[in-house]
Length: 268
Image (cartoon, rainbow, N blue to C red; front, side):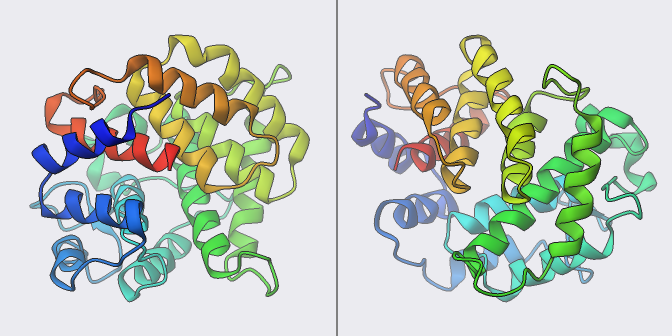
Protein backbone atom coordinates (compact mmCIF):
# COMPACT_ATOMS: atom_id res chain seq x y z
CA UNK A 1 0.00 0.00 0.00
CA UNK A 2 1.15 3.53 -0.77
CA UNK A 3 1.84 5.49 2.42
CA UNK A 4 -0.33 8.51 1.66
CA UNK A 5 0.37 10.17 5.02
CA UNK A 6 4.12 10.06 4.34
CA UNK A 7 3.57 11.45 0.83
CA UNK A 8 1.47 14.29 2.23
CA UNK A 9 4.16 15.06 4.80
CA UNK A 10 6.79 15.22 2.06
CA UNK A 11 4.80 17.76 0.02
CA UNK A 12 4.06 19.88 3.11
CA UNK A 13 7.75 19.90 4.02
CA UNK A 14 9.17 20.58 0.56
CA UNK A 15 6.41 22.10 -1.59
CA UNK A 16 5.95 25.72 -2.61
CA UNK A 17 2.61 27.54 -2.03
CA UNK A 18 1.11 26.33 -5.34
CA UNK A 19 2.16 22.74 -4.65
CA UNK A 20 0.74 22.85 -1.13
CA UNK A 21 -2.50 24.30 -2.51
CA UNK A 22 -2.65 21.44 -5.02
CA UNK A 23 -2.19 19.02 -2.14
CA UNK A 24 -5.01 20.66 -0.20
CA UNK A 25 -7.41 20.31 -3.12
CA UNK A 26 -6.44 16.70 -3.75
CA UNK A 27 -6.99 15.89 -0.07
CA UNK A 28 -10.15 17.86 0.70
CA UNK A 29 -11.60 19.24 -2.54
CA UNK A 30 -11.33 22.78 -1.16
CA UNK A 31 -10.46 25.41 -3.74
CA UNK A 32 -7.32 27.48 -2.99
CA UNK A 33 -7.34 31.16 -2.00
CA UNK A 34 -7.47 33.55 -5.01
CA UNK A 35 -3.77 34.40 -5.05
CA UNK A 36 -2.62 30.82 -5.68
CA UNK A 37 -4.13 30.30 -9.15
CA UNK A 38 -2.89 33.76 -10.10
CA UNK A 39 0.69 32.55 -9.70
CA UNK A 40 -0.01 30.12 -12.54
CA UNK A 41 -2.16 32.47 -14.61
CA UNK A 42 0.39 35.28 -14.54
CA UNK A 43 2.54 33.44 -17.07
CA UNK A 44 -0.31 32.88 -19.52
CA UNK A 45 0.06 34.65 -22.86
CA UNK A 46 -2.65 36.81 -24.37
CA UNK A 47 -3.29 34.04 -26.90
CA UNK A 48 -4.25 31.64 -24.11
CA UNK A 49 -1.34 29.23 -23.95
CA UNK A 50 1.74 29.23 -21.72
CA UNK A 51 5.31 29.63 -22.97
CA UNK A 52 7.87 26.90 -22.36
CA UNK A 53 10.14 29.19 -20.31
CA UNK A 54 9.67 32.05 -17.89
CA UNK A 55 11.02 34.56 -20.42
CA UNK A 56 9.19 33.13 -23.43
CA UNK A 57 6.46 34.88 -25.38
CA UNK A 58 5.39 32.11 -27.79
CA UNK A 59 2.88 29.67 -26.28
CA UNK A 60 3.82 26.00 -26.18
CA UNK A 61 1.44 23.05 -26.51
CA UNK A 62 3.52 20.96 -24.10
CA UNK A 63 3.82 23.73 -21.50
CA UNK A 64 0.12 24.54 -21.75
CA UNK A 65 -0.84 20.92 -21.09
CA UNK A 66 1.49 20.89 -18.07
CA UNK A 67 -0.26 24.00 -16.72
CA UNK A 68 -3.67 22.45 -17.32
CA UNK A 69 -2.57 19.51 -15.15
CA UNK A 70 -1.62 21.94 -12.38
CA UNK A 71 -4.92 23.80 -12.73
CA UNK A 72 -6.78 20.49 -12.61
CA UNK A 73 -5.12 19.79 -9.25
CA UNK A 74 -6.63 23.08 -8.04
CA UNK A 75 -10.11 22.24 -9.31
CA UNK A 76 -9.91 24.97 -11.94
CA UNK A 77 -10.58 23.34 -15.31
CA UNK A 78 -13.78 25.39 -15.66
CA UNK A 79 -12.08 28.66 -14.71
CA UNK A 80 -11.42 31.41 -17.30
CA UNK A 81 -7.67 30.69 -17.52
CA UNK A 82 -8.30 27.05 -18.40
CA UNK A 83 -11.02 28.02 -20.87
CA UNK A 84 -8.62 30.38 -22.64
CA UNK A 85 -5.99 27.66 -22.76
CA UNK A 86 -8.40 25.10 -24.20
CA UNK A 87 -9.64 27.58 -26.78
CA UNK A 88 -6.05 28.26 -27.80
CA UNK A 89 -5.29 24.54 -28.10
CA UNK A 90 -8.32 24.09 -30.34
CA UNK A 91 -7.25 27.03 -32.50
CA UNK A 92 -3.75 25.65 -33.17
CA UNK A 93 -4.77 22.09 -34.02
CA UNK A 94 -3.62 21.27 -37.52
CA UNK A 95 -5.86 20.18 -40.37
CA UNK A 96 -4.84 16.51 -40.01
CA UNK A 97 -5.92 16.47 -36.35
CA UNK A 98 -2.41 16.85 -34.92
CA UNK A 99 -0.63 19.36 -32.74
CA UNK A 100 2.92 20.61 -33.22
CA UNK A 101 4.92 23.29 -31.48
CA UNK A 102 5.55 26.60 -33.23
CA UNK A 103 8.67 26.33 -35.39
CA UNK A 104 10.25 29.28 -33.59
CA UNK A 105 10.57 27.05 -30.50
CA UNK A 106 12.82 24.52 -32.26
CA UNK A 107 16.18 25.84 -30.95
CA UNK A 108 15.28 25.08 -27.33
CA UNK A 109 12.59 22.42 -27.70
CA UNK A 110 13.11 19.04 -25.98
CA UNK A 111 12.83 15.92 -28.16
CA UNK A 112 9.18 15.29 -27.24
CA UNK A 113 8.18 18.77 -28.40
CA UNK A 114 10.42 19.24 -31.44
CA UNK A 115 8.46 20.98 -34.23
CA UNK A 116 8.04 18.80 -37.29
CA UNK A 117 9.29 15.60 -35.64
CA UNK A 118 6.84 12.67 -36.15
CA UNK A 119 7.40 11.20 -32.69
CA UNK A 120 6.85 14.58 -31.05
CA UNK A 121 3.76 15.20 -33.18
CA UNK A 122 2.18 11.96 -32.01
CA UNK A 123 3.04 12.70 -28.37
CA UNK A 124 1.68 16.26 -28.47
CA UNK A 125 -1.48 15.11 -30.23
CA UNK A 126 -2.10 12.47 -27.57
CA UNK A 127 -1.41 14.79 -24.63
CA UNK A 128 -3.41 17.74 -26.00
CA UNK A 129 -6.26 15.40 -26.88
CA UNK A 130 -6.12 13.88 -23.41
CA UNK A 131 -6.42 17.20 -21.59
CA UNK A 132 -9.21 18.40 -23.87
CA UNK A 133 -10.94 15.10 -23.08
CA UNK A 134 -10.49 15.64 -19.34
CA UNK A 135 -11.96 19.14 -19.69
CA UNK A 136 -14.99 17.75 -21.54
CA UNK A 137 -15.51 15.05 -18.90
CA UNK A 138 -15.23 17.67 -16.17
CA UNK A 139 -17.80 19.92 -17.83
CA UNK A 140 -20.18 17.12 -18.91
CA UNK A 141 -19.49 14.00 -16.83
CA UNK A 142 -22.51 12.15 -18.17
CA UNK A 143 -22.16 13.38 -21.77
CA UNK A 144 -25.58 14.98 -21.42
CA UNK A 145 -24.62 17.79 -23.82
CA UNK A 146 -22.74 17.82 -27.13
CA UNK A 147 -18.99 17.97 -26.63
CA UNK A 148 -17.64 21.46 -27.16
CA UNK A 149 -14.46 20.10 -28.71
CA UNK A 150 -16.00 16.97 -30.22
CA UNK A 151 -14.72 17.55 -33.73
CA UNK A 152 -11.23 18.34 -32.49
CA UNK A 153 -11.08 15.21 -30.37
CA UNK A 154 -12.47 13.00 -33.11
CA UNK A 155 -9.81 14.24 -35.53
CA UNK A 156 -7.04 13.74 -32.96
CA UNK A 157 -8.24 10.21 -32.16
CA UNK A 158 -8.37 9.24 -35.83
CA UNK A 159 -4.79 10.38 -36.27
CA UNK A 160 -3.59 8.47 -33.20
CA UNK A 161 -5.39 5.29 -34.28
CA UNK A 162 -3.73 5.57 -37.67
CA UNK A 163 -0.30 5.58 -36.00
CA UNK A 164 -0.79 2.45 -33.89
CA UNK A 165 1.05 -0.66 -34.99
CA UNK A 166 -0.77 -4.03 -35.24
CA UNK A 167 0.68 -5.13 -31.88
CA UNK A 168 -0.65 -2.04 -30.10
CA UNK A 169 2.69 -0.22 -29.84
CA UNK A 170 3.23 3.29 -31.12
CA UNK A 171 6.14 5.11 -32.81
CA UNK A 172 6.65 7.72 -30.11
CA UNK A 173 7.58 8.32 -26.49
CA UNK A 174 6.31 6.11 -23.67
CA UNK A 175 4.08 8.85 -22.23
CA UNK A 176 2.16 8.93 -25.51
CA UNK A 177 0.62 5.62 -24.45
CA UNK A 178 -1.37 6.57 -21.38
CA UNK A 179 -2.55 9.84 -22.87
CA UNK A 180 -3.62 8.03 -26.04
CA UNK A 181 -5.45 5.36 -24.01
CA UNK A 182 -7.66 7.99 -22.39
CA UNK A 183 -8.31 9.90 -25.61
CA UNK A 184 -9.14 6.77 -27.62
CA UNK A 185 -11.40 5.24 -24.96
CA UNK A 186 -13.45 8.42 -24.66
CA UNK A 187 -13.77 8.57 -28.45
CA UNK A 188 -15.07 4.98 -28.41
CA UNK A 189 -12.01 3.38 -29.93
CA UNK A 190 -12.28 0.80 -27.17
CA UNK A 191 -10.32 -1.97 -28.87
CA UNK A 192 -7.44 0.32 -29.76
CA UNK A 193 -7.34 1.78 -26.26
CA UNK A 194 -7.32 -1.70 -24.74
CA UNK A 195 -4.39 -2.74 -26.94
CA UNK A 196 -2.41 0.30 -25.79
CA UNK A 197 -3.19 -0.52 -22.16
CA UNK A 198 -1.92 -4.08 -22.60
CA UNK A 199 1.38 -2.74 -23.96
CA UNK A 200 1.64 -0.35 -21.00
CA UNK A 201 1.00 -3.20 -18.60
CA UNK A 202 3.81 -5.23 -20.18
CA UNK A 203 6.20 -2.28 -19.74
CA UNK A 204 5.17 -1.31 -16.23
CA UNK A 205 7.97 -3.12 -14.37
CA UNK A 206 10.60 -1.22 -16.35
CA UNK A 207 9.05 2.24 -15.92
CA UNK A 208 10.52 4.92 -13.67
CA UNK A 209 8.50 5.99 -10.60
CA UNK A 210 7.61 9.25 -12.37
CA UNK A 211 6.27 7.42 -15.41
CA UNK A 212 4.23 5.06 -13.23
CA UNK A 213 2.80 8.02 -11.30
CA UNK A 214 1.84 9.83 -14.48
CA UNK A 215 0.32 6.71 -16.01
CA UNK A 216 -1.76 5.98 -12.91
CA UNK A 217 -2.89 9.60 -12.56
CA UNK A 218 -4.05 9.64 -16.19
CA UNK A 219 -5.94 6.36 -15.82
CA UNK A 220 -7.50 7.66 -12.60
CA UNK A 221 -8.65 10.87 -14.30
CA UNK A 222 -10.42 9.29 -17.29
CA UNK A 223 -12.60 6.29 -16.46
CA UNK A 224 -11.46 3.41 -18.69
CA UNK A 225 -13.79 0.81 -17.21
CA UNK A 226 -11.72 -2.20 -16.05
CA UNK A 227 -9.07 -0.81 -13.71
CA UNK A 228 -6.59 -3.73 -13.75
CA UNK A 229 -3.79 -1.52 -15.06
CA UNK A 230 -4.50 1.18 -12.48
CA UNK A 231 -4.36 -1.38 -9.66
CA UNK A 232 -1.05 -2.74 -10.94
CA UNK A 233 0.39 0.77 -11.30
CA UNK A 234 -0.58 1.66 -7.74
CA UNK A 235 1.17 -1.48 -6.52
CA UNK A 236 4.33 -0.36 -8.36
CA UNK A 237 4.06 3.05 -6.68
CA UNK A 238 3.98 1.36 -3.28
CA UNK A 239 7.19 -0.46 -4.19
CA UNK A 240 9.06 2.66 -5.35
CA UNK A 241 8.01 5.16 -2.65
CA UNK A 242 11.04 6.48 -0.73
CA UNK A 243 11.36 6.35 3.03
CA UNK A 244 10.80 10.13 3.19
CA UNK A 245 7.40 9.67 1.53
CA UNK A 246 8.32 11.05 -1.90
CA UNK A 247 9.08 9.60 -5.32
CA UNK A 248 11.96 10.34 -7.68
CA UNK A 249 11.33 12.61 -10.65
CA UNK A 250 12.93 11.97 -14.03
CA UNK A 251 13.94 15.66 -14.15
CA UNK A 252 15.90 15.77 -10.90
CA UNK A 253 15.15 16.57 -7.23
CA UNK A 254 13.57 19.96 -8.03
CA UNK A 255 10.59 18.11 -9.51
CA UNK A 256 10.24 15.39 -6.85
CA UNK A 257 7.35 17.25 -5.19
CA UNK A 258 5.47 17.40 -8.49
CA UNK A 259 5.97 13.66 -9.01
CA UNK A 260 4.78 13.01 -5.46
CA UNK A 261 1.67 15.09 -6.06
CA UNK A 262 1.03 13.10 -9.22
CA UNK A 263 1.30 9.87 -7.22
CA UNK A 264 -1.14 11.23 -4.63
CA UNK A 265 -3.54 12.15 -7.44
CA UNK A 266 -3.28 8.59 -8.73
CA UNK A 267 -4.02 7.02 -5.34
CA UNK A 268 -6.66 9.31 -3.86
